[in-house]
Each structure stands twice: as structure tokens, then as C-alpha cells.
Length: 555
Image (cartoon, rainbow, N blue to C red; front, top):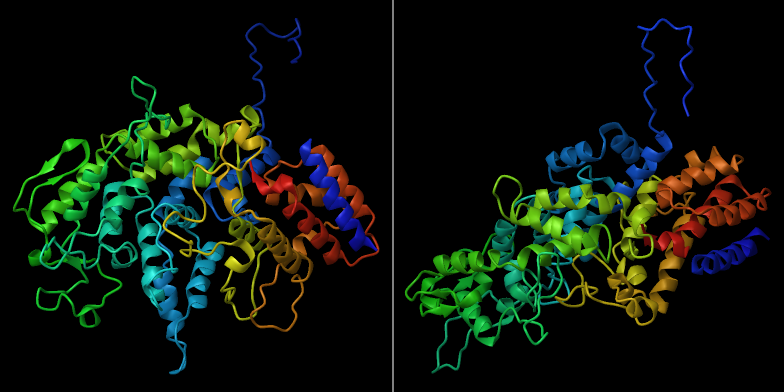
């Protein structure tokens, strides 16, 4: 009977979302000083603040991670996280492969398994979370010509994680020379022009490195707003001649170890892990016009042309606001204020000691900013972001200590439920555009909500079904060694203490954002299910909260 109550409560939640000190005695000696007691910090408030930070900076709060933030404090937790070693997908796959029998081979499912392992169990949560954000900016995708190159794709993700707190210029160069990017955007094997053979340099990477990985299409102010000319029109950052200039820069690169004689022997040179290598005979040595009319002189090596071209991109005024705003959107809020973007962009341009492009300083600036900490209070109508569906899954499993009898997370096709899987976007434009705005109220208010681009009716239902399976029916082992089981034991201990249970779920799942109205609805439902098994009663609450519109928006 109480299962019918769940449906009613869910509909109710959807509907509700629309909408002094004493004076000193005169008898005291005149020289007696009475010190006021030190105000105690509300532990409950600190836990909610910790959970809010972990929503932004990890793959979801857990009881242990909340306690760690409370213990260290926000800034010290960020510093600690940045010092932790990288959890490597390649290392995981290498170790996993060593357990295979001779006929077994790595598959797409194993690559996704490595991602689950690090996001759910990796201690370097902030590094992995920023790497995920970077993977949605510096996009490569298995939906390409990679065939079965699972280790190479994992290695590219590790590259992003390695540079998550490094320098943007170094990241840009490693991305550019990655053989996976070379294959994805056809820089690998790009040749100098040859009119007799009707060969012209490939423009694919030249275009996307500017449009998507660095400066965007139009000139920006430091605060991310668009610059306009005297006629009020947008100012383009580059034109076709600029694309051609960079396309000529990116000639002469191929798999590591390639020579002029083996240029076409890709099957002999194939190397998906090590940076691409230049073959001078295939590089165009003419002059090249780049951004801001910078001209590279003739007769330079492929390596020098590349270095100067990437420097030219790196020093463009757009890089700071273009990259900073997208990182804010991926971690904190879809519609950051111009002032927030400007503050973070200023850190990108100078980390305080004269260094440009320090991503560690940028990430810390994003998370330590007052808007990240208090935007849900100061700007409640515009602050926040729709949670990416796959991040809802990591949140559920981290919050409730998910485990598997096999000690592995063999959920190899998350895109079936979420229209998302790591490094599996449909194109170089990612799963969604940072400027996407769904028609209706959001567009009318001049706001964006990127994640709505993959929130279709079909996938909203599939995501809901995932939570039904994971919460309602996967809190007890079913004999399947691959089952991912959630542990509600801590919550079951509070099942008869409705207020305490809801407050625990409020902190773990909503970072304290549960409204009184929502709490009342859930409390009423919970008190009507007293005849059900304790774990089922908890599961019902978790399912309702994680499918609610209130939870769906990260505040």
C-alpha cells in the first residue's frame, strides 16, 4: 500500500517546487573583567557547508568526507586534496588486465569501470572532479575512429587529471600532442600543402583549439561578458585566415617514433600513449598569420612553430574568462555573476606571484569565492546548476557506501540511463553546450542551463528507473556478483526517529537545502509506512528525494 503513497508524494514534491548579554553587577570589584564566552560554531551548519562544498568539489558527499571537511576547514581541505597523488585509470586497467585469462581482452566496460572506481573510491576527489570538468571542455570521444583503444582513452583522462592543478599552457600542449586528440581531430598525419597532390593542411584541430579549448568565437571582457564594437556588434576572435595559419602550424606531426620513411606506416608506428612526434619533412615552413596578426617567420621547425602558436593562444585576453567561466559552470553554478567570473579570471591572469594560467589557483579561487559559499542565500533565484545525471549516480553510491560482491563496479553503459558516459560525448561539442538555454522561463530571464540539453523525457524516465533499481531494490544482495549494493545500515538505525533521519538525509543529499514543506511531506509519508521493513522505508525516502526537483538543482 505504501508504494502508492510514493507516487503521490513525488507529485506533491513536484508541485511544491513550483511554487542580549546581562549587565555587570555594581557590587563587582571595578578591576574585575568578565570575558564573554567564545561563541560556539554550529556543528550542523558546518556539516551543511561541508556537504555543499563536496557537491561542488567531489563526486558527492559521504559521511566520512563531510567529517574531513569539518575537521580541516574549507581551504585546508582544498589544499590537502591538491597534494594527493593521482588515481590513475591506466594503472587500474593494467592491474585488472593482469588478472585476465589468456582469451580475455579489455573492453569499453573495463574503461568505464576504472572511472567508477576512481570517482567512488579515489581519495583525490577534487582532482578527479576537475578532470571530469576538463573532459567536458577538452573533449575527445570514443564515438570516433579509436576502434578498441580503451587504454589510450583512459590515458587521455589521466592526462587531464595530471594537469588539473597545473598550468593551462602545459595542459594545452599535452592535449595538442596527445595521439588520442591527434586521431580525434585529425592533426595526426596532417601534412604540409602540396598542390600536385591536391593536399591542403587539415583545419579541424586548428578550428576547435580556438573555438572550444581556449578563446571562443567572440571577444570577451574579463568578466565573461561579450565585447561590442561602436556599432554594438560582437567582435570575432579570429577569421578563416587565422584558422589556415594554425592549420599550417599543426603540420608534420604523427605517432611517436614516426620517420619520413615510415610516415604512411601507421600500423608500424601506432602509439596511443606517448606524445606525437614531428617529422620536419612533412611540416610547412612558410610564414603563418596567427591571432592578433602575429606572424610566425618562415623556415622554423615544427616544434618551434607549435610552441609559439600555443603561446599566441595562451596570451590571448579571452582565455581567462572563457576557461574560468566554464569551470565555474561545471563545478558551482550555471549563471555566475559577472563579478564572480572577473574575480576568477583575474586569478587566471595572475595567481598572486605573477604566474598566468595556474589552474590550481583558479580552482581554489572558484571554490573559496563568496558566491560559491553563499550564492544559494544571496542569489537564490539564479544560483545553482542542474545536476548532471551521472553525478547523481556517483552521489548516491558515495553517500550510501556502495559496494559489490566482486569489489568492482561493472556498470559499463551509464549512457543508457543518463545519456552520459566519461569521454563518450556525441561530438567535440560535448554532451551539452555551456550556453544552452531551454525554451521557456529560463530563456525568458536571459539565463542558461546547459545540462537541460540532455534532460529529455526519455532519459528523465531512465534516470528515475536507475534510482528505483539502485535505491528501492539494491539495498539487499540478490546473489549477482556484479550487483552494486547500497548500504542503508546507518539510516536504518534512525528509522523510528523521523526528524533525525530526515536531517541526516538532508545533509547527505541536499546539503541542508530541504525546505520545511518538503520535510513535512516526507515526514508524513514516512510515518505512514510503519508496517514496512526498515530498509524499505529508508529506500523510499532516498528514492523520493533523489527524484525530486529540489534535489535535481545543486545549490
